[in-house]
Image (cartoon, rainbow, N blue to C red):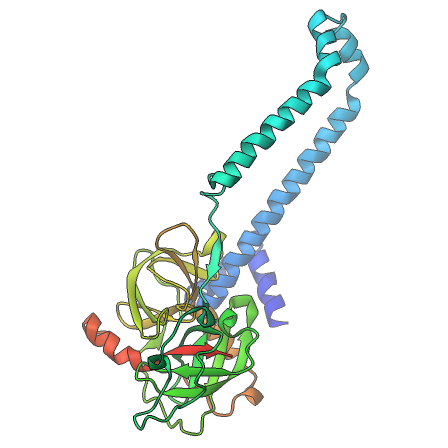
Length: 360
């Protein structure tokens, strides 16, 4: 009912049906609530699509009416009173010409397909879950504690990705596509400590998953150094990420290149940053140490075009977790201790809160 009332307000605003005071109050709401502002933009886009569709339908209807009023036979007799020699030849051999043209088209397209030129500009989206079982590994890849005893399963798992802490008491964020279809899940930090986790909440629509550490050896992660941005980031802003495309954390930096993701997706940002399979689920942070998104994919055959789910949708997913599914309170950090640090110091503080995710 709340969403329905908001949609009615949005449509009333877009149709110009609000009074001056009501309009002013609604615009204030858009400025103060980024989630409402995002829903407003999405609904505005939807209404624009519907309006364009209606215009297309009206044009088609008008053309059909015009076509019904045309006397095709009369026009034919008026404009083509005689069959010339060229017309006779065309009527006689047009089937052969069509066959020859079709053969030429097939030949050209076959050449383009097999040479790879036909699709070279047709970029597509790739999720960044890593297939671990296709990577050759040595005994050094096994996770061990300082006594030499293995902690967690010895085999590397089938898939891998990245996750990061939401709270000090063991809640972790990652992408839905990283954990999709998992029988069991483990996380591993940069020091090699491994913990068993379980799925708490899945949001396939926004490609978000919330996990919880359930390992008996887990105590606490300590106070998080970063915070979560509640509004959209700015175009051109410097950003960075830490992820696990390999068996150790990898740092990447770049800038926010678009406020929409792949194919105009309003749920995500486009960022110019190097990412690879395994980076999915990693945090995207601004210079001040605010998490502004979750790395989710990249555009094939386009250098540096990566995508990240906006933090506003992560916060929305957290708010939608049923209380019965939370064993302990999920309280987000509100104090940022990274804002005045140099980048290398920021990375040192963040590393303990970013994890490799192993999917079995």
